[in-house]
Amino acid sequence: MSPTLTDASPIRTDAGGRADGLDVLERGRSIAETYGIPLAVLLEVTHRCPLQCGYCSNPIEMERAGNELTTAEWKNVLTELAEIGVLQVHFSGGEPTVRKDLAELVRHATSVGLYSNLITSAVLLNRDKLAELADAGLAHIQISFQANDAELANRIAGFKGHAKKLEVAKWARELDLPLTVNAVMHRQNLEQLPQMIDMAVALDADRIEVANVQYYGWALKNRAALMPTIDQIDEATRIVDDARDRLKGILDIDYVVPDYYAVRPKKCMGGWGRQFFNITPAGRVLPCHAAETITDLDFESVRSNHSIAWIWKNSEAFNKYRGTGWMPEPCQSCAFKEVDFGGCRCQAFALTGSAGNTDPACSLSPLHEAIFKTAEREAATGSNRYLYRNFSGGTLEPDAGYDS
Amino acid sequence: MDGEAEKPIATSAPASRRRMTVTEHSAPKLGRGVVLRFDETRQRWVLLVPERVLAPDDIAIEVLKLCDGQRSVGTMADELAAKYTAPRADIVADVIAMLQDLAESGFLIEAKGGRP
Image: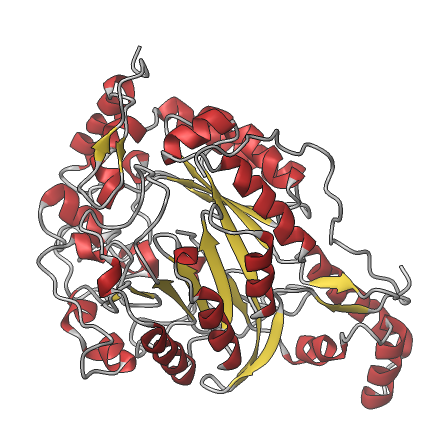
């Protein structure tokens, strides 16, 4: 998930001295204001995906095809989102192109005035399908790459798709679609980061998202196989800084650092229920794409009698960790409580058993030291074999000597 | 798909870098994936770009509306100078600076047929 994706919230109007007269619509609001409808919404139209990446942010219990919203239901969702003031939608998954109605949904989004982004593995696309999506009004495509080297990339994905991804990226540029390369990084591919940045330039991408794995859902199960060493992270930060200088005006680089080695927690989702929501394949409306990992929360669905605006404003799940009133110590008296909003609720739940605790990524959490040590230990001694993502609870990668 | 052939990655230089250089003769237009529209909910103009929603100020809105791929920057400056009865030279400089920043963000492209 992009840091900017979840950052897009209303509204600051001063131009801040920029010559282009533009400002990003975000970060400006006092928490005393009402929670206006987000500018951008993530639509996970399916959990089906031919790839089996062990770092997938989908829940372990994935939604089966039979529970997915129908074409008509998604169209109603899109219409409603446009009416209440959402401006951008991100079609994601699972693999969104699994759905045969994707172009129809993009066309509908365009017709109601929404700006469509596609977040895809690309392996199911062909040139005609991509052209159809472009004709339907698709404004931007993000293609995931697992590594630079095809063999490693295919092993990480549990699917031979790397060559196809390169091909689709080329078609995207031929069709004049803005292209972002999504690079999810972890211990077993960080050494290829410089080559992945070069690859993005060679593919004529506008942006690359260098996102260290966040450990929820499948990624949490695979943490020992994915956790980088602190030296790898320091090196990655240096590589990104250098590339940003070198590629200014050629390639924009977004960089997400891993929580476990952080001192301060990330402002997850820009704050719970503050400027982002996600709709699952079955239509549940979530404050975060990983929120269903918090098993003691109930989430309302677009299939309920409630409008999406009502769910955003009034539902218990959205209000539970909204703002700062829910915070325990050390968050409550912390000077940064409106900077990071206590970090990530899903991570707090995963690591402490309660989503209401301080995110252990924060150095003020009593558990911070312990998770730092866990990360170091797993980075040094964790098995490299993946638990591949699938609908049957995961399959351990065959032992091919990856740990020797 | 399992048997697909692996092809080497293309390592040639990018075919097109979209970062144009703006001059008085440029005829810029918004790139694909860049949408200027009025947001009824928030009652203001917004510029939709990949992964961001931007809030143009009044002058930027006015200039962006003129970026139709037909008008040259010089023509834009003529129109703005007449409208605001301001010195044309000042306006040209300001508009070029603004458009160059937009171009470097990847939001503007040179319209086909426009002079470089």
